Length: 241
Image (cartoon, rainbow, N blue to C red):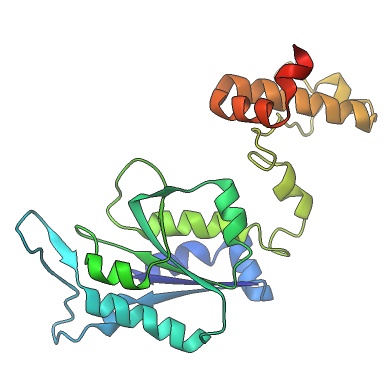
């Protein structure tokens, strides 16, 4: 089981997005736990401010260290020092998020996500509490909530019990370094297009071989970077050469 704690200025946004569908049912079963911690609850400012101007000038406001630190510390105090934890700051400056990272993080006990806003967060508190800086991609959002929600979804579905069908997480895109093969359902003919005959054959070995071939073709066409890595990792260039 993994407990997710999201430090945010918009807890309703986070909870509404993550307590639905598969993740919502996983929370109800106790496979995972998700909470949003409102950073604003920890400010000492009587007006509820959590931001101020940046030293040295520049546009925009910066989230202050004190409320962020106290919000994070409140979570650590509740979960206990003996629990394995990572504090993840969601930022465009971080390491790119990918499936292997999601798998690694799904093995932790406590994950604390820190969502920034405005021009970011005072560097001093980041140095003190953050263990990982992670980016969803090379673009900038208005806040870290959406990126944190995407990461929580990707991580949570790899926690045992969340998906029920554990094989699903292993065979989908990126599970083995390739994009997923094309899939089909009923009816057998739709808009004049037939399901590939091999999928109707009942020969599981041939079906598996076809799926691998299709995954390789699709990956080569759409993600040549992944295709190159897969071929090199499996020494397939030499085998084919």
